[in-house]
Image (cartoon, rainbow, N blue to C red; front, side, top):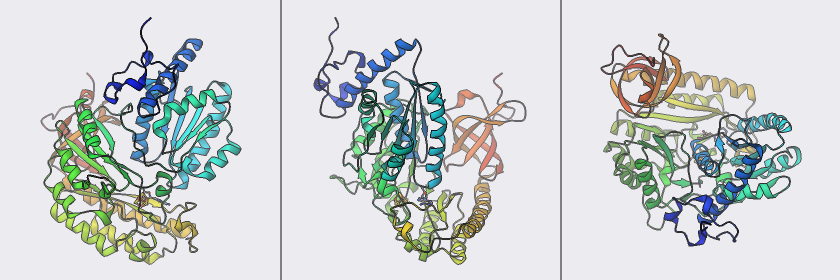
Length: 508
Ligand code: 5AD
Ligand code: SF4
């Protein structure tokens, strides 16, 4: 009989090539990470294999992701584990295992989850072997878990943001347990590296550089559900990016709730600008993006590094939230309207071809029509290329939820429509400034728009993040090609590959 090995004797480096079918799972699990999770992956693999044998068909798993880029990256980690333990990944919620990775930043995301759970329950009645799991930010709220325990008993597994790395161990728990298996941690100072990841795109990837947030903007639930700020060690980030590059990745997006305060809790402190300068040196990486920057922490050093870089994309997402100094103060944003305007002007002066995008909240408690006018004034003065405009959502437990002067819905709607109109007007002008230029586009996918001759258009992004649709062969996906921008349609362009005048999207 082939020898089985004990993961307690395997180094982290060796783990990457480990054959999970030859791991000894009859001994106790290692008490250190990531070896412990590989032990549970091996155990899950046996369970999935026996289910597959019994059913005489593959087992399918589906992850639905709500919310931000952080959640999207977390879902890639969860997919990595599901792939390793023998599930076939699918987009269909008919799957044997369905996991919702939830968001709770605004209430409408929560409502969508509750709505869809009802639909999953009806599917489960037809397939009693089906397992339903929930994770992500929404699960960090005790009131949500109470509601699920009371009215959604058909959910099999619930876990949170801090113990996501334990997914394989939690799955084993779920299979051993009768009824709901729940494990939520209040916080953690741990960052577990070197677990499998299944990327959505072969040519681009998110890379976490930090977790959590210490800013406590008064409307925001993120610091409560994602915990305190923790930065990853620069060496770990850089070796991950090197590995991604070796694997064909051309574009990385450095992810954190507030990337500008990267490194503050590290022993060998490195600023975000210094980290970017190191990422720039990784061979094979052609584009570097990052999300999200807090205006209060954006340094001159960062502007200088961006200006001198060949790889950092000409795009900065700089959430404004409100243009009214009075509201900004109540939001605990720690900058004024004038400071934001001065910062935007400095960035544009130093890097003229940059595109600026933003987030705006309308209807924060106490906001008047005059405050909304201030926001519109900033939109016009800065000239954003795009803005995500949100209606204020009351989040239980945040300071803003306890403010007495909540704004009436009809007033919020009216302000929201005015802000949206201002964003659309300025963005149209801003985006159109590149008309006629020939610029490199990273082709991301075959889109769903047609070229008028029966072919599908490819869809990609400029360095400044603007979308471009153009005719071309699907084999160009993942490549950077030069495209002449021929027509601007508000937030995106249509164009033609330079030197390919008669190209269409048809395969033949
Ligand atoms: N209501 C509305 N929008 C919010 N955001 C964060 N919290 C809330 C809330 N309670 C928005 C902010 C943030 C983006 C990710 O979500 O604009 O930048
Ligand atoms: Fe929320 Fe403010 Fe932190 Fe962003 S910076 S996650 S808005 S608390």
